[in-house]
Image 1 (cartoon, helix red, strand yellow):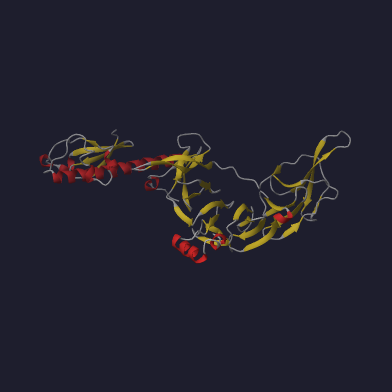
Image 2: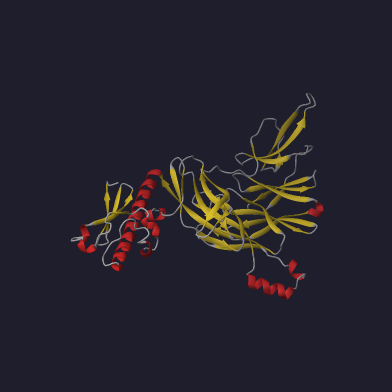
Length: 436
């Protein structure tokens, strides 16, 4: 993406050791009580969770028709939407008509040819709590229920995807001392894992590269009474576990994440307006590299933000609306040049507006220009009085009629990087390098 000085105006930027990331203008991607979003590992999609909150007038009519008792059981459905970075479009994937449904876990399968997400939804209704595991194909939008669990049977589902392969371990707990394991693939097939014969209770885990699966147990040696960890390697061909080894294996828990040079944080900030100030949640883009460009404001009135794994977009949620701000990557020297060009363009713009304000003032006062500080007298003649803050006025109290050559007579200037934007009596502005 080519950069221009205009893109650097009124935007935030953070720097790493070699590059600068500039946040561009936000784009709305979903609305309607959006709560959270989940980037796919390749940064191509965002899975968004929201509630289908009805418009006030529609809700009022519905409550009047149902009565006070009946309306309490009517759901605000849980909805999952998918946004594509390539098409910049959002579509609805799944809708759960329950006031008690919530997304418990979202895991993307890595290494898949198509974006595949595994979503665990919990639905709590009075004494019964149920879990349903869904497989979502990001391209086709197809939804496939895989496994269910019920609190009546003391069941609970857990998911552990491979850090690199499009497979995941499904663990179905049935009480504090019983667990069943299965292997789920990207096509939605679920195959039970037969545990090693006579092996004590243990847990499943992936190797750090995500290519090997182990069943890990802790045993007590009959000779020395010491505790030892044993590792049973799963053979994907024979679908059985090999004999255990005591050699230590580096394992990965939780699917693995890639370290990024940028991150996001959320904290309370003071929002100041013309009439009041209040504390609000704000999200920030942060760099892992210390320096003057270590963080930049993403948005006020926002408590959730997440950066794309590709570092090309940052997602945030503000007042129930999901937005993204594209990230423009520049090298440090390019950013510095663009920043100077942007500052120069701003100085030229401010000089032009100041010139027009002065000429309009003189038109109301018989060609006389104001004397002294012009910020108060000329402010009514400019759209934004802030343009006068850096303007240096050099033609105080004189008449334009006294000027023989207005196109060559300087009446003020705005300082900029490496030069000045000079304002002339005929209203034109000219940049000159070297003056400070």
